[in-house]
Image 1 (spheres, rainbow, N blue to C red):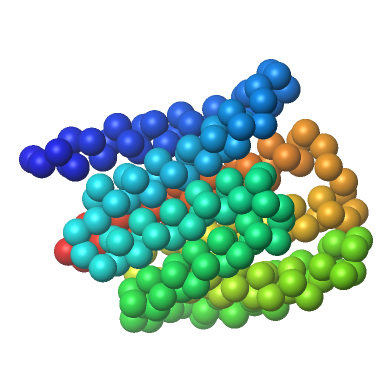
Image 2: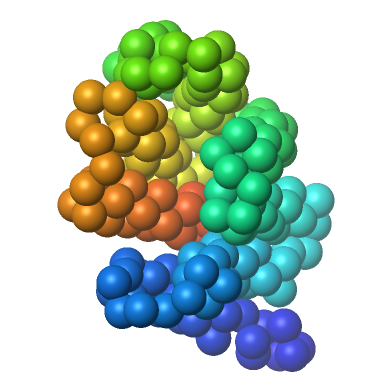
Length: 217
């Protein structure tokens, strides 16, 4: 067993602790720098875990997806919504490539239907949610990439109840962000839901892809 194999389980445990504890420190008086570092730590550790486990191109693509997510987490706090969204969008493009390389040979009609419907449903919902209509076009472009990523995850070879569900949780989290810009407002409850859907979704994506790659290898 090499050093990466020894380190990987600890990185995954640390990622879970960092990600789930982030919401627990809200309102405890930590400064913005600490909060930003803590926010980025969970998915950054997932990226390091994926890198430690990577043994081929697909493994490194997974690490890149998680790294883009971590960058997006930090940029949302330091550079604003649109800049953070660019980092996430790059991650979605890499994820689409990863899932396209690992397509499922056959789908049931219900699986195919969900993959087809998630794209227009996400895009249309994202478009109508923000109160500031000047950002609607940018949100639609982002939502298109997000929903294609989720559809590709759902139809990939990776475990649907991990990677597929994780991608759908990512979609739900981002739709709540867009809703927070419009009808539902910004509350602690909404913020907690956004973060937990996002982080648990990322964790499920990472673990599911890694499991699928291990089985196929």
